[in-house]
Amino acid sequence: MTDYYQHEYTGIRGRGSMLPSQDEFELFLASHGRAGPTSYETKERTLHALGIGPGAKVLDYGASWGCGTWQLREAGYDARGYEVSLPRAQFGREALGLQIDSNKTDLSSDYAAVYANHVIEHVSNPTRMITENLERLVPNGFLIIDTPNGGSEYRCEHAESFHRLWGQMHPQLVQPSFITWVVGARPVLMGTALELDEIKSWLEEPSTRISDCSGFELKIVIRKSVG
Image (cartoon, rainbow, N blue to C red; front, side, top):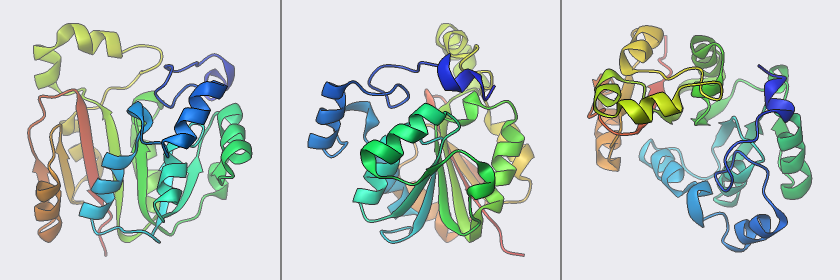
């Protein structure tokens, strides 16, 4: 699968997974990344709701060419990236001056948060992706995952959309029951329409909480427990 993401995987134009054209890159810089679907504004709001502010060390896991990593850095975070695609990682390092690693052994274990934006659906072993990234967190750190919703409610109501999503590019579509099985007793919040107030409320009393899961994109927040 690693080989597939070097040259065969092209991604979707304008969504951060495909290397930008010169015009797209210039627009990205001019808008500070805020124009279109590459914007990380909602990701930054999620981090703030979890009490993770500028200066915190954040890993953008599955960083592609660094569009999200760069925005986090511009917002004041100590942001680094991990990207398995060597051409994309190289672009981020050279064009944006980012630290984007392609070797997991180069990643540290002191992140306040790991953000995996539309990554878990691409990996061959989602369980390992979750457990490895939890190990990279400081105590009480957060693993945040945004992913297409593989839950039964969405699958039943939007069968055609679900089956278009599932395939070579997305070999895994995770559902809430799988996530709760993987994380065990760790506090986890999931939903497809999570409001910032709901995230803040969960943070006051972390537990397993599953909100409305009928929408397209599932947000998963896992807290690394202490002890």
